[in-house]
Structure formats: structure tokens, C-alpha cells
Image 1 (cartoon, rainbow, N blue to C red):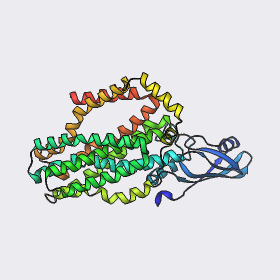
Image 2: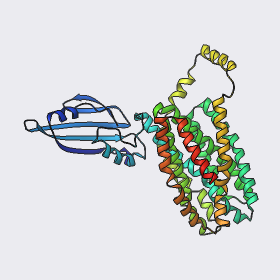
Image 3: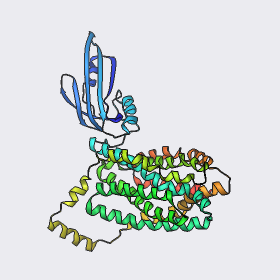
Image 4: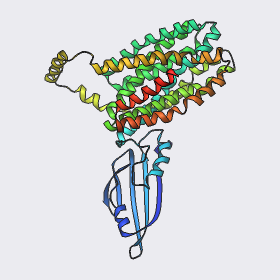
Length: 400
């Protein structure tokens, strides 16, 4: 596959003796190197499964050296490596961290896991948005009003109980297997909606599918938090958010199919089946979380100590309660807006499915830049300050 191919880069330059001495120092920026002899350097730490740098020197005159610096590398990032290899090729000649790299450098394992999780997150984003994009077309086929749409969407929210069940099982049985099983079940439950004989059957399949999808999304975040270095966790979350946005965008891209036939919206529910085989193949390289493995090996005295501490600590601490409250208040505004927006555009503004696609692409694409910058800002300046800025901006938009 493309992301498994080695990449090569050769740079020719003229340096004085001081510049040559600096070039011969092992790097510690985008990659950490170790010297292995004869002007050859190999990987010590970084997001590569293979990395080598070699320097060839020809002395042209006193203090003037003709230097050829050669790189060969293979990124450990599945699928996305084909995109990042271009950025790596631009960054390697400069002995500094590029602006787009995580604040804390990822190693081979964490980069691989983040890449796999991002692939799964694309499907998660698609599954999470499919009902929002298609419910107005389904209601039109089954001749139901906006009130019926609201009731259906409210009932679908009960699927959060399924999400909680997924997370409880993941704590007992491990993250990896539960995540992959949830992925398959969510795709199949969504695909079942394509053969819905009535509106309420569609709502029932989405209750299950959305519950599994929500649990899958939370589980992806848990694995990322357990595997990424502490200084790059917000960066990782921003990458996963961009992947989810890409998945939601794919559901928007295929929405124009709904213009072709009154039942065209059903095709949108079948699209994830096309990606499932490739996704399962990539996911074979997803290991179990190291933190889960470490926490599952606890001797009995440690268990009793934990139980005694739990008796003294509150069941829900103040910080968790505050975050839950903020999330609840945000979703009071965000959920109705996102769920009914397509119906509003179609019924009250006369948009076709293609017009809705254009609207979402034009209004949502610039947000990707903000998501990436917010993740990096949170890692370098703190989470609280970042949340305050975003809350102020969001409130200003709602008030306007």
C-alpha cells in the first residue's frame, strides 16, 4: 500500500567547517536521531517505522565543503502517511519543528495508533451525521411533518444508554475489541435503515446506530488520551475532530443522490459498507491500550486501597459536573440547529439536496482551520484559556 513505501530525499549544499559540524550533530526536532558511525544516523524517537540520514562530504578547498545529505524514511501513520510524507519532505531540510507538528513529538506507536483512530473516526463522523442530513428527505417520502421529525430525533437520543453500555464493557474487556465490534455493528445498523418500510423503523435503527456511534466516538477519544504524550493530547483530539468532520462531509457530498429519486436518500445509509473491509484491514494493526493493560494487572491489596479511597471521594467531582453542565448548555442550542437545519433549508428556503451540500461545504470547511489551531493552542497555552475564547466567540455568534 502507498503509505508503506519508503520515501527518499537528497539535498546538496555547500558549507563551511562550522556549518558541517552543526550538520553532523544528531537531530532533535521533528525526529530524534542516534549516530551509528560513518556520518550515518538512524531513528531514536519519532513517528517513523524506518528512518536514516547519511552525509557525504567532499572537500573542495580549505573551509569549503560540498555536502550531500540523504534521507530515507517510512512513516508509521496508516493511510494518512501519503499526505504527511509531503509535509515531512518539506520539513526535513530545516532543523526545526514545523508549525503543523504536535508540541510533544509522537513515537512510532502513538503515531500509528492516532492514524488508525483517525480512519475509524471518519466513519464515526459519517454515521453520526447521516440522520441529520437525510431525515427531511425520509419524512417527505413517508409523509411526516417536522413534529414527527422532532419526536424521532428525541427518541434517538435514548441511544446514549447503549453508549454507556459500550463504555462499561470496554472498561472490563478492553478498548480494542470493543471498539472494532462497535464499529461493525454501527455500520450494519445504519445500513439496515436503507430498507426502512416506515419512518418509525428508520428511527429505531438509528436509535441503535447512534448509540453505538456515540460510544465508538468516546472510546476513540479514550484510547487517544491513553496513548498520546501529555503535551500532544489536545493536538490529537483536534486531528480526530478533523477526521470526524471529514466523515460528516462525505455524507454531505453524497447527499445530492437524494435529488435523483424520492428514495435516493436510502443510498446514503449504504455508503459505510464500502469502507468497512479496508477499515478492518487497517485496524488489524491497532494494539490494545497500554494503560488498559497496566490497569488490568492490579494485585488485591491495591484494589482494597482503591476501594477505601473511593469511599472518601465524591462520586462526581466538581470539575466533571462543570464540564457536563457546559456540554448540556451548548447542546441545547447546537442540537436543534444541526438536526433541523436541512429541513429548514429545504422546506423554507427551497434548497435542493445539491444546494444543501454546497451550503454545508462553504460554511463548514473554514472551521477545519480553527479546529486544528485550537488543538495546538490548548497544548501550548492550556485548556481553560482555549475554552474561554471559544465560549466567548460562540456566545457572540448566538447573540448576533
